[in-house]
Length: 184
Image 1 (cartoon, rainbow, N blue to C red):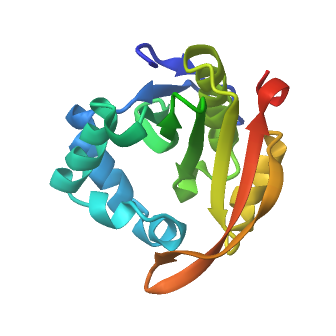
Image 2 (cartoon, rainbow, N blue to C red; image 1 turned 60 degrees about the horizontal axis):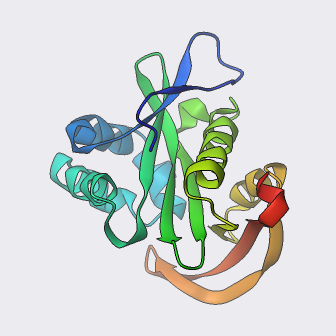
C-alpha cells in the first residue's frame, strides 16, 4: 500500500507528496518529532516514544510489518521537508473497518496538508482495504482534530468518557466515522 508517492493538493507552493514511511526513515522521523515536540506531545500518545531514532524505528517497523492491525504510516513532504502525515491502523479485515489518524507540525498547520493526506488515505482504505467503516478518535481537548474529521465528512457518533491517559491525565474522546456509501 502506498508504494509510490501520491501528489497532494495543498495551499503550499511547490510539490507536496504523501509517501509511506519505513524504518529507513527513522532518523528523519525522530528529528521531525523532536522539532515540534511540544505540539505533538499535547494530543498524541506516540511522539514521546518516537523522539529517538530507535523509538521511531520501532514504531515505523510495526507499520512496515503490518503488526497488530497497523496498515500504513505515511509522511506528507513539502519538497524534502516532512510536515506531518496520516496513518491507517486498528484494521480489522473481518469487520472490514479501520481507524484513520493524522498529525502536522506547526509549519504544516493551515496549509491543507492534513486534509489532503487524509483524503488520500480514505481513498486507499476504501479501494485497497475495502473498509466499510473508518473511525476517527480524538481528544475532546483537540477541537481542531474533530473539525478536520467533520470537514472530511465524518459523523460524530459519541463521546467516551475518561477513555485514555495522556500526559498523566485522563481524557474524554470523541468518536467519529465514515461508513458504507460515505466512504465513496
